[in-house]
Image 1: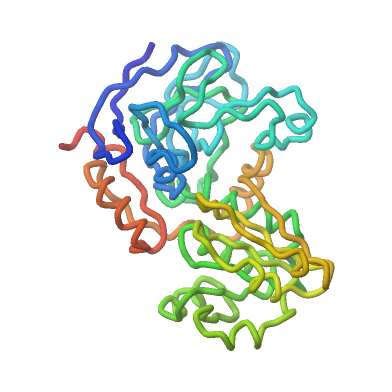
Image 2: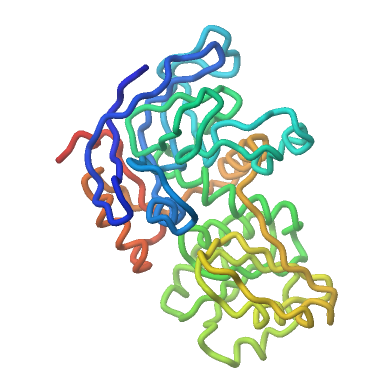
Length: 349
């Protein structure tokens, strides 16, 4: 086993502590990645605090990983030492089911292997990117184009693909009206990507305090959902709404904003169920859907798209000893728009 430094939480309350974890020795198709940057995702907090189910501690979160290949297994063909690479929310899948065969490994019928908090095919408990190194099979590694800085690329491995996938699947394009609910870590990426796809983009946020940001990021319009007139004014307007918030919202109110055959897609994942009245759907043949990250092929496509359109995450880089502070700021919506850990500071106390 390979011993590496990491930051782990040992219970639901934290705090993070510097520790040592073990990575498996390289198998023939494995890649050893020296992690340079790791993004902080709201999912890390939900998971570590047991809001999405039981957790085995200690836990090293982190599924927005950008780094450099430092060693490859004997049969690796896709990557070489020195390559700029990334790892997202999953590190393996069965590879054999119909969904995996379609390149939709995120929907593996046997369940994909999460980058942290899962048991892999070797029987090991997976630990994530708040660490100096990670070992991943080459089929679940993606190449980060030179045009994207490594620090700003890290959040693309979750926030980028989580928003790119539904926008692509439901056809964001010229002539389409797309609304993005929430302008946070996910929302700001949805705005950038939908704009680059040529859609007319509207941000729906609780207040107008981020309006200037939203317009600079590529939104054409920006409305406050705290104003009841917003829902009257925009009724029946949108072909697609991407809900990025991980909190309770009035789904029926947002469904009323869809045009005929419009779709509301949830990518935010609140801990509690969301209620929906069926009459909000049947009146205009509206759909309420969900979407979860993307497959490896689509993740690479997203990175290439972002490089082509000069898209990267808006980030605040922090040292590893500030993870607890950053988590509290995420919960307070006090980040524009994604924290990224500089892993070179992992040994700091």
